[in-house]
Amino acid sequence: MNRQQKAMVTEAMKAWVEIADDATAKKLIAAYTAEIDNTYIAYCGGPTLTNKGDYIRIDGPSIWIEFICQPGAVFPAEVHYHTVYRDHTRDYGGSFSFFN
Image (cartoon, rainbow, N blue to C red):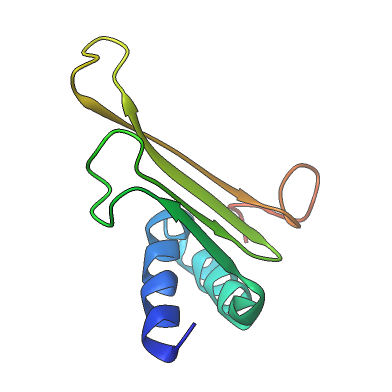
């Protein structure tokens, strides 16, 4: 990725990471941006993420974010957004915590 693309990916990561307290979010963004040269972006569908089947994944050494537009369960004609954010190294028994 070029510098502009890396900045866009970092901004996208912040939408999930900044749910943590400020100190934790700052540490996580620093870690994820340090790993950005080994981070991969996968996508399918359109760039606006507004149509059923549009999908994007940010997958790095630590960060993993997926976002997909699916048919709604209650309103199948409408788009339902489904997302997941995980940290390969810090959660599931790792050192991830929302506490300082």
